[in-house]
Length: 383
Image (tube, rainbow, N blue to C red):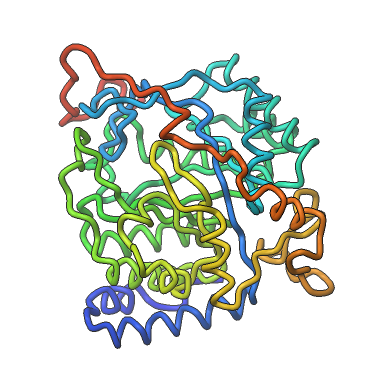
């Protein structure tokens, strides 16, 4: 479905400052969300399957070799370790599980571990499977699909017009090629970005309309959590009411996409997280993020339930579409806790060992002089 508002209307909504006006916008976005998705939710959890030592210069990321920030680091997980984290995510109530690695792409050996991890998660859990592993060819995308991956995440990060301020070593066009490869392989796409990188309100609207052209099934919205030692490390957090406003605007521009808040939601929104949900979210990234801590899964489930949304899982959640993935409603009502075996599992394993960056990442202090962020196009830019 095309955007419900024009570019000019989105710009005008971006100028709203009064809380009453933003509240009216939230109600408008809530109506769009409930009309298309009812009370269903889509809760995701990730594992940082390979961390640190990234050669790229993305200005928000502590893993970049250009960042002076200490680098959280570990080598590629073994497939059985990936499975262990997937089972913990399932026990915590996640509907889907994403395997994430740093960098533009993976070696053959590391890619093989992702494929085997995906097979294990597909065979031994009831989760929907996603991967976020950098650039890829259509051939690799097809291999992911054959291994059981259903959706691939690959952000554009920001508007095309602002992109060179965010990264010079990872081309915007390369990101689009990967998204095209994902679609060519018959996989769903998960494409979003990060707010508060210094972009203008107009560029936020540009990014939303660029996403509308891509038509991703899922749109993750990240909020900059400034990390000292990165290019954007000294920026202030966003005003929480501003966050809520922009979530609602994005919902009106992308009415049929699944929206979830991911990194930075705790720091930027605080007590306004429930209002952000009402501004149009389908779900959140449960548990912890790539290198920072998040929220206890039970708190996230409670937040959605208090708004009348259903966080229960389907018994066949991994094998068949949920009502919230644009394939239409299933027959009958989504069972509520504790009506299904998986919900009983959630109750019995409330203290599941979710991914915890504070204890499971080895933080390495960078030695020697850290290279300056590039200020011009790197060699090979036009290749």
